[in-house]
Length: 496
Image (cartoon, rainbow, N blue to C red):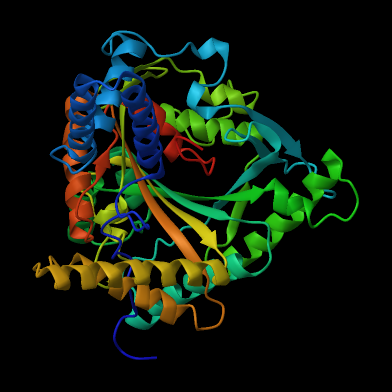
């Protein structure tokens, strides 16, 4: 192995790649319907006024579709989110749902199953059955399960160790994508919590031997006082998503619920083994109560992750009134309210330059003073054959765009070249063994006991993301209450 650090190229997708460029299928559908209605009215009326109004409406629609906010997002989508927020909450003056009526609307329909494997009566496993809302079917939905893993906590490591860790994780993703396992997503979540200064001082004092010199004892106490305000605790969790359609293909006979749970447990055992061999050994599998306690903690950080008091089922994790605002969502905790903000990294904000395997350490360990946050990396697994085809199509679109710019005599901004380089790198990587494709996503959940403290925490998180090479963080304005779902251990998006 070389002495230099192993590098990876994560970015390069600076825009949407498709046959119609940046136009989305929804926009194409709306345009087609508009043109159809306009032509029918024009033929029926044969009026110059209808012709002019149609052209005017098309121009206004084009301007609205192309308009962007100061952060680079769609202005029209932001306006729709703002309007929906005002209608649902009265401008942030009332809760958007009643906790006693069930789960929040964005969670959708979820069935909770508890499976206890033979020989482990004290270790139930929570299986969440998510309904496929696009096809309105339970049979085409997916299962998800969460287990706690031992995080790195490695501190400074030799370059060889960092490269080995990155190589093992690369093989983990490639193996999961190409091992014919019914797994299409792996989420890795790190929860960062400040440690109370008194607790840290007491821990350091307990490490001092009784017979050490007074000057050394005073020096150690002084050092503990300096470090107490920035001491943090880290807990790591992994969530696996299992599509039911693929799971059913592994069972020869028509499967009942017990057979599905047993097969899911076998699949998760394989995944846990692969994750452990990649350097993250299993700590515990989360049952329904522990999963509910984790979700409650994410809403109310004053409640401990492992505290099960008041938790009788998975649904008890949402027993909090919440009031959505523009820049946050406020949840009513046991002893005080909490303010939360959710941010994600869009595809055009990922680092374009090569990064190392520990490029996200700025977000996990590099934020001071200590800030309550959750950093979640989502990896959508793509088998090698479709990943290679998508990379080939992406390179084809990028090459065509670059040729078009040259033919028109336009000066390149460098985006086409960066995208072409990324696609070529993916094609080269897919030629090596045990490598599959992934679609990564990065989400950040920040919490604070007051709105000003949350605003300051967001500034610190944004600075840490920029230090990691991320060009911008998209904060989900007017949708933080729905975006909370992104930070929960459910392997979900807001609309899936």
